[in-house]
Amino acid sequence: MPKADKLFSTPERFGAHLRSLRAERRVGKKQAVRRSLTPRQRQTVLAKTGRRCHICGGKIKGKRWSADHVFAHCQGGPHLVDNYLPAHDLCNSYRWFYGSEEFQWIMKLGVWMRTQIDRERPHAMDLANQFIKYERRRAARNST
Ligand SMILES: [Zn+2]
Image (cartoon, rainbow, N blue to C red; front, side, top):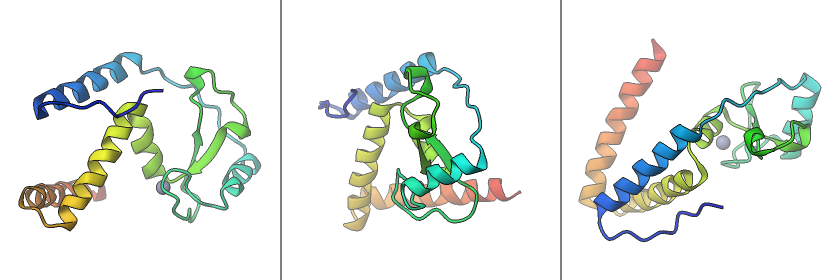
């Protein structure tokens, strides 16, 4: 199991490691063949967590959610209702876009960054400002 616990001496080395994880992901990416679940199977999957997203823990409202293949099919995961958990579309797409170690680094970076913003550290406020602008541009693109 990959673990995001390596220590780095410089930000450049950390960046290089993240780039190497991205390169590995691009090489190893396989198109998972997904058969769709029946409405009854989807209800069974949704009931497993009491209509909560298994990634963030938030309540799932409405019909737009993903049945997340917990153990990836390309790694030998069975295609059964047992192998699915419900997730928000947003959580599911963020999660599956990245490899396990990459996702752990992203979580650690996010938690650290959140703390820095909470403490109003100047470098973090600058990045938070850029992030807000980025999100606004993204929202504007997606609404057209
Ligand atoms: Zn979620």
